[in-house]
Length: 135
Image 1: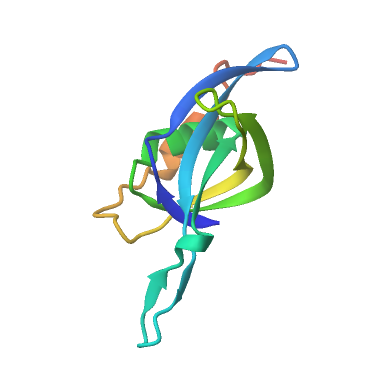
Image 2 (image 1 turned 180 degrees about the vertical axis):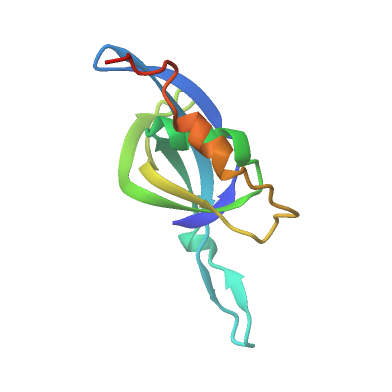
């Protein structure tokens, strides 16, 4: 699904099998477009809806939290499902679209510049904290 980020991502710590894990929650307005009959496109409001995405992979979760901001155009890939809930104000049953996100890519529509890390920085982040024991 593709759309614009509705609010800045939130990084949370949750328990998974008794261990702490950082996940990122991302709310995206999934947008569908249709032809306007004049060679352009307009948003199809009947097929545009918010999606609550959770990024479970810790590395991806941290990068999304660090890089993505409200208004960014993103494409999110993962498993979607409907989550029912009760509106506390009206006591009515409602439902929302959710996704367990596997991948988040940033659209370039609103990007001004990009700063790449050197390969040495990437390799240093992957290196273990301690040196291997001498044999």
